[in-house]
Image 1 (cartoon, helix red, strand yellow):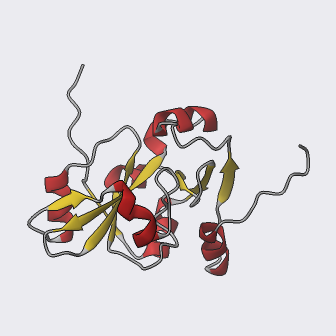
Image 2: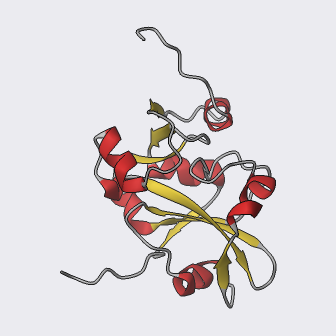
Length: 165
């Protein structure tokens, strides 16, 4: 498979248009893989690999949260971060029509419409973080600050506290 060219996704086109450096990472497409399994395939610390979650606020507004794959979105913290009384997870069947992405391939970059987005604050500790490239089986590595600038968002504490073992 030497010389196989990585198929460009909409995410990659957006980043190239904005001249944002990124590294594409392709792996066998399997929507059943967990984020932690994807981190292992990439050979990366799961704390540096992030998932993109879409929610709806009580107001009806949609919000995007980017959190570590091992983390669980704290809905109260998420609501507070965006100034809502409450937010709830979007139903899986609503994801594609709303964002243009399928479950397992949702990226905070290049959605059909821009939505208010927050990245979990731990991302700032890393030189590079990983998010979906907009397709199952593809991830991109980029600087957290570049992601924040690209989607016009900030950082906040968004995940549930982990019980210490």
